[in-house]
Image (cartoon, rainbow, N blue to C red):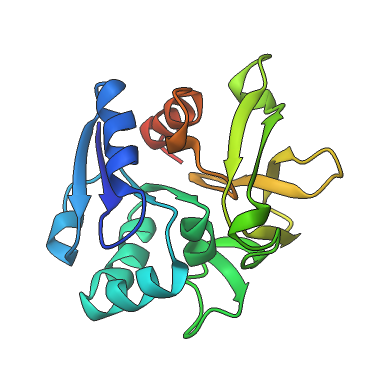
Length: 192
């Protein structure tokens, strides 16, 4: 299993380490050529405007659309969710439109309002997943083909999946729990 991690800004090192702990081949992606032969791609948390600008400048964002059209799995966490969304509020030049969700940037507040919570996520098994939210986006709308995987206690969706594309408002790479990355690797191994 060969998984790329967009490595232009953000928490890419932490995702690479999580994948390597799971014995997956993890490749930092900075240029379109780095996407060759990947089974999946993770777009990490960070600053969505910066990731968008640098990804466009390096020519990697259009290549990400092509990679998805070839069937690769994708995971977007925090800023990565914003980049993969069909629509994202306040994102200059827009998002990639790879998953049918609408998201709102920094919806839970500024850095000081960051929080952690244990979330039940059925696809990960019975034990709640400890989720870290840092200037997190919120999923405002999901399209008809999108499955909500997790919600906050108030009912706000914070993780979703559409086929082989998964997004999360939180940072799974900042916890020792590898179950979300394991689930992503299982998605990447399917033929959907």
